[in-house]
Image: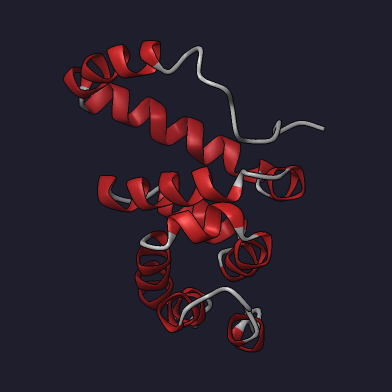
Length: 141
């Protein structure tokens, strides 16, 4: 496991809640890590602009952990998707997370097969945002 405790404590702009969430996200057990990620996602605005905090979160949540979330129940898949949305904000992170593509595709395929109504309901939102500027870096360099 990666020790992000010192890095979490040293985040200049991070409040105690985010620091604690990042320490939990680097926990020894997946249960701790899920809780930490979930709590960290409540600080999405900070993580979106703070590269150091995002890098600490990426070190705490390695691609294998994210892949396990994507292969889990729907609620955990949603946590993984929210996490990926934040972490893919820069090219270096995108390259490190490239190994998540296969479990991400499998989760999408599974969701479409098990809940076609939800997929159909999401189409208008996807079409509405199709012309929106993209924030994430490309996956393939």
